[in-house]
Image 1 (tube, rainbow, N blue to C red):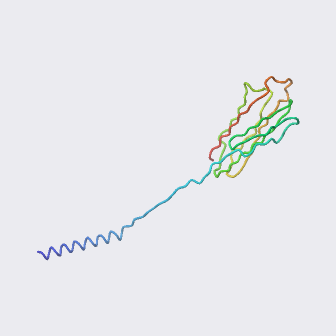
Image 2: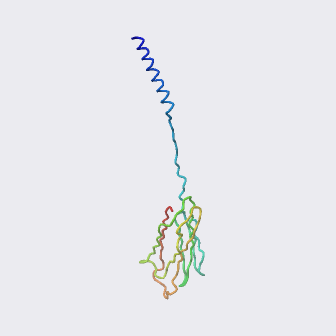
Image 3: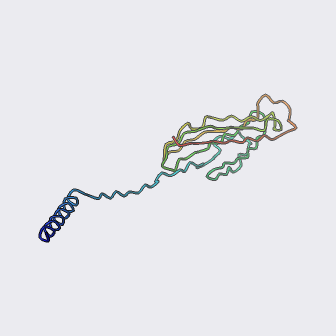
Length: 164
C-alpha cells in the first residue's frame, strides 16, 4: 500500500509538471503600449493692414494691428473722397481653416450718414501657411451737398474662423 501511495504521488507530481510545462508552452503575454500627441497648431492672425488707395488731401493715418485686431483712422476731406485699407489675414498654423462667419457693423444710428464703408469679401478658406487679403473702403458719399453735423462713423468688424 505504501508503494502504491508513492507511485500515486509520483504519478500526480509528473502529471502536474507536464501540465505546467504544457501551459507555459501555450501561454504568451503580449504588452502593447502607445502614446498620442497633438501636433497641430492653431494660429490664424492679422498679419498687416495698410492704406493702398488714398484720395488727394486725405489722411489715412498710421493703421495699427496686433494678431487679433486692426485699427484705422481715415480722415476724409470732401464728398467723393475715399481711403482703401487692405487687411492681410495669415494662417501661420498647421490646420486649414474656413470662415465660419463675418460681421461688419457700423454706427448707423449715431454715425454720419455722409460716410459709408464698402467691404470686399474676406477669404472663405485659408490653408495652413497661406495668406489672403480683403479691403475696407471708407467713402465720403459723393452726393452729399452740405457739411453734415455728425462727422464720424465707426465700423466694427469680426471674422470668425473654424477648423476646416
